[in-house]
Image (cartoon, rainbow, N blue to C red):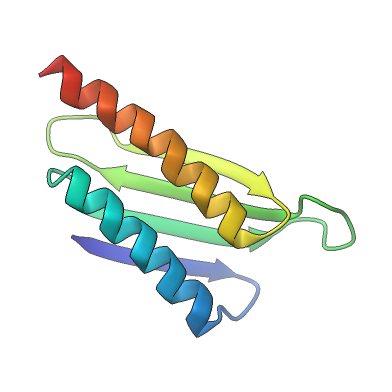
Length: 97
C-alpha cells in the first residue's frame, strides 16, 4: 500500500512518521483491499488545547474514499482516533460483501 504523509506548516519528526506508518501498516494487514492512504497533519490555533488535526483518507477499489478527520491534544492521539473510525468503516464494507 502507498502512504503519503503531509505536514502542513510544520516539520514532521521521524518518530511521528514511523508511528503513522506502523498504524497504517496494521490497518492494511487487516484490510488488504486498501490501495493508498493520504495523511494530512496540521496545527490549528496553536495557543489552544485540542489543536492537532489529522485527516486520513483511504482509497479502496469500487468504494468511495473513506475519510476520518479528528482533532486531539497530540498527533498520535488524533491518528489513533482516525484509525479507529476508519477501522469501523472498513469493517462495514467487509461485512457488506
